[in-house]
Image (cartoon, rainbow, N blue to C red):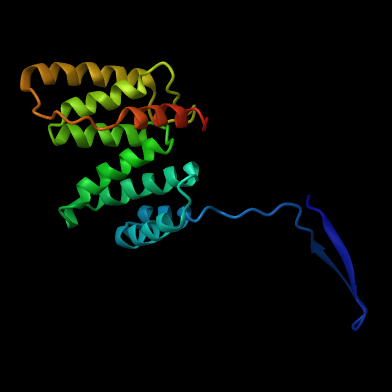
Length: 187
């Protein structure tokens, strides 16, 4: 049962009942773009999300992580339409992770993308970060630590057999610390 206000229209002498708004909140802007991704309107979603990204504060980690996770999804799902979209998906997975997205979705996509590019050392690096004892996954997550420990062990075996020429680290020490710190901000 809601709360209502009784009013009287003095001109027509009629009583009416109007709802009283106690609390009103907005739906985050990235939700419309997420719905477009669900409806396979990838280019429109990407356009909306890139515009939203431009106007979002660099300190708004929660919204940034969600914008990047949606960009990651849109680019990945439409990767066959543009040769740069796979790399864009990887980039936005990395950015979502840096901004505190801790459900396992960004981590998983980033690891899989790196593995497909034979960047095994970097995929292992991601696993090492998210299996760190100070890194926290959301309790509502897509994946949990144990799954990344298993993935890391498999990647290490593949690395022993195949090798990897990649010498560049994926994250700086500062970014690694930021990832761990931001994982603790959202539960």
